[in-house]
Image 1 (tube, one colour):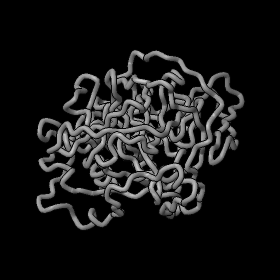
Image 2: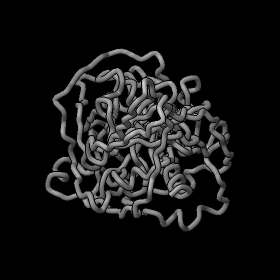
Image 3: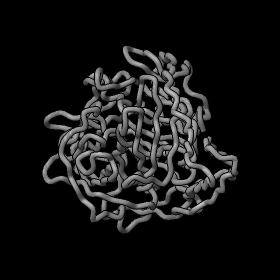
Length: 398
């Protein structure tokens, strides 16, 4: 039972045009390294439909993992005995071990855990918008030694809905259109294992997805912008996950919260979290792509995976849905922000930050993250700056 000291959560961003944005400033365009990284633009080509997925093939770019490095996990154990404890290791699953510490001659033992640090997220001002980078897209990737791509997840027979709200939920996407298109799933194949559950000091805060070697994309309102910390669990299901990590940096264009959420900032309701562990190297990651309005109002093979509260009060069950329409609304065109509306995409609290994506010939690409709702539509935040934000986080923290 090891305890890890929680690293600091830091942010890149500050006020620009009425809302925080990301630095630094490039007056003559981004560096060549940014322009050349993962470029593979296909214009307004829509995602592959079901027939194309059945008869074609998906060729995701593989990546090699870095050589393993030693990792030390430590904790303090206080006992009322001078005898040296015995330590045994027990394998509990794929890549998972349990420390069993046996203390002889002691009537009491206390494990002293390191408490997560609560720190204020720093910010930095930017006067030039991310949309000027025009990054187009960033490619997905899969570990070279794990060729286990699946275009559909394995659905679970487990299904339980508990309609209602937790009192501490910040922004509530709450519109489910009949018939409900969500299904519980559990699948450790790529890309379905890339889903993460977000937790902060107040508890479970939403969903996210691996978007780089050590990067997670989520909603800005899922991040604790007060002194706090952020933990991600990969494919969290029924109390356990494939792996966990803590955020060390938070990239954003606006700090969105329950108090300031509105039509003026919901188009920028996304954040990229840099992790203290390279989970993407192990499990792979999604690509990102700027949404095209040529795809508006068509029921296309869009997908979504997340942790809705109405299937589990504690976010224990991952859900999957497919085939819905999106419609782009440009609330802040000068800044590059975009809100995608849908009256066929189902949301409930807990799905905030979950990816909306499609498959192209080289893998899955995210076009936005679940944000909020009205009585007639659910909102997905996206646009030029989303991909630019991911690119900058990956460039500065590779």
